[in-house]
Image (cartoon, rainbow, N blue to C red):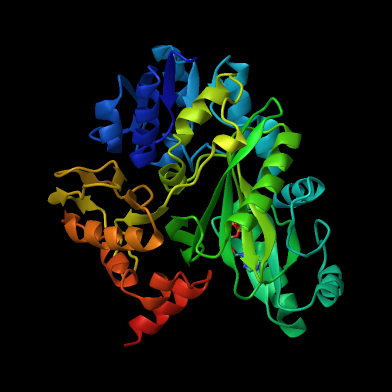
Length: 449
Ligand code: ADP
């Protein structure tokens, strides 16, 4: 096992990793920008190193500074959290070249899944269902027309290097295909420095359902069920739940086995998420994330398995001790992402937290890095915490969430809490009847009033 882990991240995930390390008896090193000197992860770590000024390219993305921090502190492994360098294959390689362990999959697997075209081909070969579309890159508009005709409209044009919902365009019909094709290409070039695009059938009313997997790189892999992340605004998830209100246990077991077997065959090491769109009883792979995800706690709540603890253990070279039959799902969990943003305009709201009170009681978990008097810096993601609630049934979970939200107080900055208070009394949400467009429609309808 590792002796000292450097956590190359900030905010709630840095704290989350730190907690797992402490429970494993591992020393922790926090890194921080000058804007984060007062952050909670810095206070709770055994050691901390300032790695640069506020801008992320000079601090949290600064590989030489991170290597120096490892060297100074004698860390033997690096946990990247999510975002930042967590899916950077080159970073994983550089660590290895310096005899440091990257707590994640191999650089080869990160690279494989980082390119959406290769990812799609790889998983299709592993027997995982994908969205009907072009076989690989679509270089010209003439090719696009031909393929679109075969697949049928509406068509989605996607960037091979895309992420965060960017580099995607829908074409409703042949007339607008040309325009959408060039728009997707130039957005891809501008954002990702790569204008490679491909085509997919655009699904009208799918849910976003993803499977959590865990592998040891020695041919063993299991799944830990699914999460339903259909409630999204601009392709950003805001509410996640497990299990999905749309799946029964038979479907879960069937699909879970397909993904776990696929990952075992690939020899995948670490935690990972296979994301699907789910429509009319069919799954369609969209991408794989080769890291821990923001919404991992809902899986932990229904399986009682500490995913980061497992992630660290397999990264240290241990074989998986958990077997598929050890994974039991109990009750229901929901996570609400608390962002420091206006609940209607979603404008970021950095500033000082004047008063902070977090809810408690049975089945309530708050993963947050903020505290009363903390000043939220303007440079980073607006996620300041997550409220995760567990109940024996979905109904109990919803009642508990309502109660927990009523106890939560964050004064001084705007947050998305009032949005969740509205969602929790909406009939569609209570019924679990929503798809990936539901939230955008709800927001549009309710702002017009
Ligand atoms: P990113 O890496 O940018 O997040 P994804 O491939 O994961 O891209 O897609 C992000 C979101 O875009 C999905 O959650 C879904 O809402 C939408 N999307 C992606 N592919 C399709 C598709 N074929 N049909 C309809 N919506 C899609």
